[in-house]
Image (tube, rainbow, N blue to C red; front, side):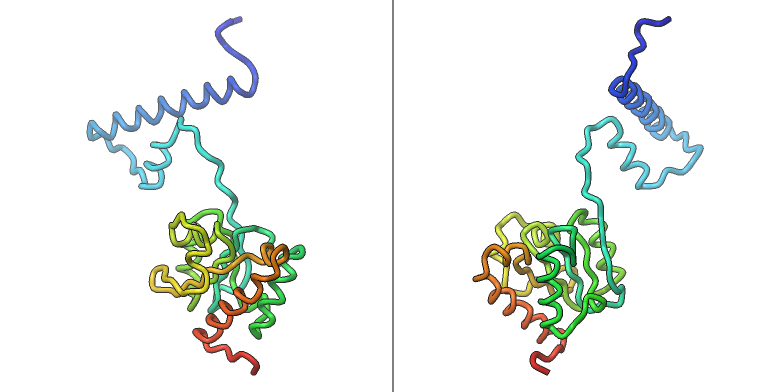
Length: 195
């Protein structure tokens, strides 16, 4: 029995990483020498470049709602319409004379997935809920307070950053700010307040 062979999940990961890295180097060598016996997509090349590197786990991407929605909501969380903050979000949407079926909502887990969904839905306006959502979408590092309450743009689409409903549960004084933000969204999309 070979004493060099280690057992256990960690040793399997290490050995697998070595095999993948060797294979990646082999493919790169073949490509550099003009041996293109099979096509490699850009996604595959990108994936191969990352083989053997320690990767950060990416948050899963969740979404729900109508892909014909004029209003696209990006949530810093993933519960959407669940729990107390979800109940509050439903009330905010209802106050806008909408239902949850009239909006499209996703989490701010992966900017590429969010971007792809924005292209599919092609909304008139995007609402970001919380710091994580606006920072992901607009690629900014400053706090939400610097951007909240004013329209911004993402690929020609108006973006309204506002506070997350979970914050409103702790700090009721922010409710007025969120409502003013939603009134701007309503005006922009043609939803009449008080109608």
